Length: 457
Image 1 (cartoon, one colour):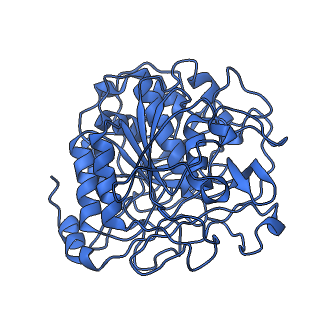
Image 2: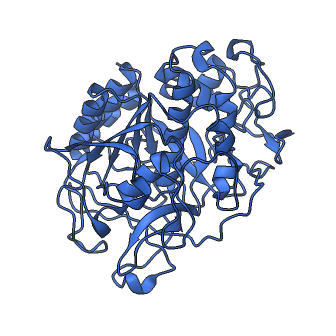
């Protein structure tokens, strides 16, 4: 177990914490080659090319979310097992409007690429992976903006669910949820780390909880805390602030596509369709999917080595910043190198200033270019960040200290038509000790959601 002053402080505070859930949205599955229907982030990360090497076969992902509808047209043919609710009962498939957040996250992972109602297709990063679904909203059905619309699972119950997922054989855990601090939840993240299972968690959004920076479990040592970025690789304006100096340190580990990401949703009075949404939730599912993709390609790699590969294969060559963590997620670069050469140690356990000295960062050149082994990577000063520019990944230095928040001078390499997007919204709802969903509602159909006022999230 990890013994740090920050962890002890959290445990002292844990009995007084309450946990709302932050949930986002979804989108995207396999294709042999890029098409005009491919989402911007799909093209930017070269997922079509990556899927020629791996499709998630042999990998099990635990998706812990609100509810899920196995009859979603985007999930037909997917290998999904409904496991348990947070209180240990059997999870049920939930129809229609009750389910869309969990269904959307699942489609980002294992979506079949179907186009529904004439809207763009929703494709999954690892269509051949197995998904174990754990339900957090045990009594869904209330109006999404209603004070009665909350999840029954508190932080302790979510921790219990994480432990179940580890024991059930998950290789990666995806949590597009966030909330307050809790001792059971922290212990669960430690348990997953001790068993070599990466916990990928949404960092939340600015304003959800004023008393914290990153939300939890993303803020716990060892978790892969995910920020969101747009198609220009600019950080989402509502990413919560990082904290390296306070008594409880929380820092982003990775930044992934999260702005205007297509997801398959249920629109009241319309039915299933894809809509662009925004938040750290889709960024989290995308990150978990990429880790599963690499695990499928390199099955002998440990969970710690997957995280090592994650932080060493980003757009940042040797740096960390408050705005991006270790940089922008790059799937194709991760697949290019066997991660088993990295130390079997989770770099997310330690302050990034320490991690960069202990595990020197390098992207080893442009995506797919170098075959250097991780152990032979060039060391870069922890106080310097460098970002590649343009589709070819040419390097462009952008100096800054680890505590800085400078914007790197690069953009996503987009080779296909980008999707015209409308920012979705999510509402951070709370009720005492109960967790509440933060669902995303497309602004394109306001009449279908008279009780919801869309905003970014």
